[in-house]
Image 1 (cartoon, helix red, strand yellow):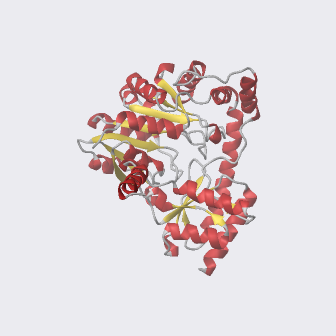
Image 2: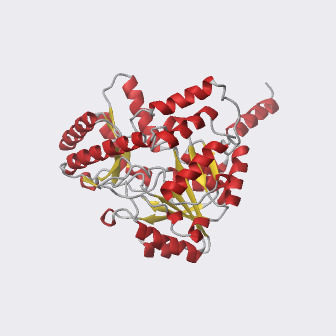
Image 3: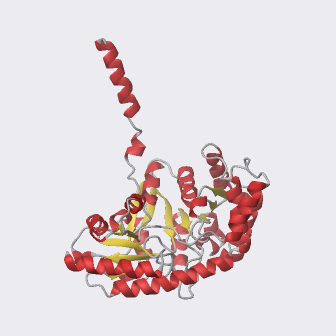
Length: 403
């Protein structure tokens, strides 16, 4: 082979391997990585107790599965409109009006391949190079990564255990600049389980109107609230804030439909149209027969949701009591979702080392808090049985005695 042909071969190889700069800035999901490692060890026969999963351990309600099966049998396997079938968007519109007091018409709703996809679409549509997006920390780990992919800059607003992991309006206002385009809210929160009050949301809404920025309200855990609490959608507070709010929800957490990949965004019509256009050139429509299942869930699965919520609350009480009794661990009692966010400062271990050693030495999987912007914490999912919760916490207690 001649020198010129060798050089050409090298050039081609280098060209193939040179990735776009935007993807080189993105960190792979630590939650998925931990869960994948735990599953691999289980497949190898290792007795693993996993507290890492961000999904309900319940099965999808039977009637929802049957609706999808029936739609398949009827041949509902073709394209739907890119933004989702009209009947489903109407049902979501009615749900938002009835439960959230939000006035969105069906043409303001875009059904996507999961709430994560809906958030990604919104950031691509709204954020330009140099725009700033305020994110509350601890945060769901994908928020800052998706901001980066959109060309924006994440501005982190730290929240504290002592203040219930909710933001201070005064601290929020101090972070606002001329470049501030968007604030991302997540209530109930992943990873902390914190729930924002109506009074706090009113203060945040007033700041958004004063400084003219958008709010993306991720409400995927809205139905999983404990102690008789109430979920409030910030867009319901007045028409002016509704115009500035993008509401995101979906089927995954409420109806135990994580693998179905169905979420939605609801927004002002120009934003919804832009999201629909973006989606038409990326994924196109969500899976047709999965949409049929989601439609059935919205119509008939509320009792299933309430049974699941009650079970999660019982597990919350159990795991909070058990972890509270372990020296060196300080759990935050969540008001929603299904995570116990726990301070591990007393162990003197950084969270990734803590999680790695716990999995390797005690065969328990948790997610390191560094993934959520807080290296002094871990996230323990209680989306598992009481028996496994009790056994897993015993393993953690005994392991901590040895280190």
